[in-house]
Length: 149
Length: 113
Image 1 (cartoon, rainbow over the protein chains, first blue to last red):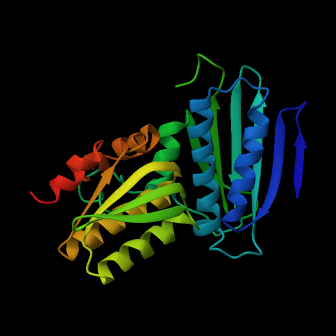
Image 2: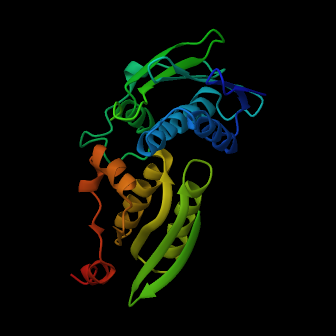
Image 3: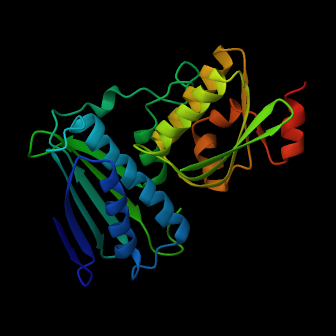
């Protein structure tokens, strides 16, 4: 299910837990960015953060259960502030328990970098319990040209 | 992801194109490396010139392939890193783990040292 209103610069999606749906969400982000003066570089990294958030929701939140959904809201607020929220229907998650993937004992681990990348490329990343019992992750980035990193 | 395999002496060069991301290229990459090792090819050079996107799953697979190859007595190196993939390896310190080359002849020659 997709709701997209370009005038409001907001999009809301409900996606089933399939990795191929990540592409759809990223496509919607690109559409949303059309009129919003995103730097190409910024859009690339925001797209990556979005992909990581949805992949986490599908894999770790919904445990690849294709009947569980991922809820996504993307909006460009006043002042060029892009806000993304991704919610899953899983059992919750403790972001504080994450290991630092850059320290020597973790550097060769095969997993554990997704949230690190989200935090690196976005201005703000917040985790909280969602109203559905799972996890909600909020990603924020200033996206006006000349204001982004 | 699309992969094309070439050889230069006893070095297997894998030209990768497209995305190495969760649910797609990440698994393919692992299979490619396993097949190479199974065929006795343990000097592997991944050419990332044509790769447009890598996510954390793709990076994780690259790390997993690197440790698998190393554990089995081989070596896996990278060439032609696109700037964004270079960024991803740099911020996670993985750039210090991989041998990375911009010149293929130098990369191939490095396996003989």
